[in-house]
Length: 76
Image (tube, rainbow, N blue to C red):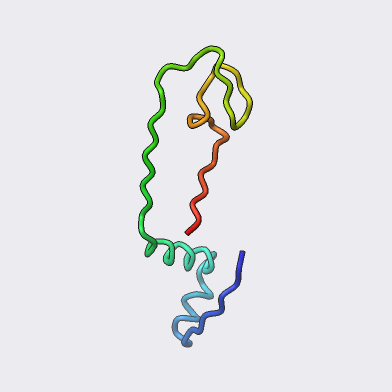
């Protein structure tokens, strides 16, 4: 995680000091200003019993895009 220093007036410092997780609250507020990213993925409803998940190697239980271990990371 990277650091960024902000300046607070006396009044805002008192409010921040009383908050249990001021840094987390700041991160949450900043992320609300990010544009929403919508991802649409089409997945076949039928799973072939011989299909192998490319993500975890499971045979016949799910497709790669349905893998519970699959994580989507979007970098801008």
